[in-house]
Length: 287
Image (cartoon, rainbow, N blue to C red; front, side, top):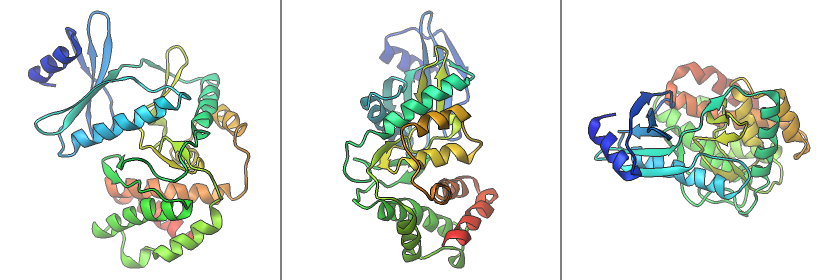
């Protein structure tokens, strides 16, 4: 972080920043811990052309979760453009290593978030991002149609355009719809985090669960659960607590695979061919 930006943030916050420490903040933005004599703030900076748009979408997503009054998110303090890109400043949450009790509370609170069914269509009021890839959220009354048209088709097309998948590896939209309509339930739209891997939640020192870096929209609640299982899973008490609120309805394993397909396609498009085998295996099995 350069001196001018440090002084600009200090001016906007009306504080004197004493220390700046680089911290882990994901793959697409710089992240810093800003410390005054009495307070700590978390700052992300992205100098990409869509950096400010990324942070505006993140702010809207965090606010949507906060408005549900079900689970905590960091308080956003600043979301501002730069000459190129933008920056985001929020409260710094000191994390701790989660216990089974912490995971249990996270499970209950995530279920409460998913019971937020205040919208009667799948989608969201605005488009946003998954990583730094655009995520379209055009509303649809049919879950299978939304998932195919707004999630799978754009990522498959991107993978084709970049040469990561070829034509004979990509099912038709009709093939995708047929499978999804057969396996997806008649469900109400739940407010989703949208990108809930282990790096996008934390437990504060006092045991409060927080969600961070969302890609929110209204969809089937099992999507968040599928993502939690993709890269190692959460604690057993998390799933036990969550399942007290949502009874199994059958075909969970198949839907988990298809919901994970979206995230694997995103990873294929963001990080390359190490994810190709996982993508093609699911495509061949179901479509």
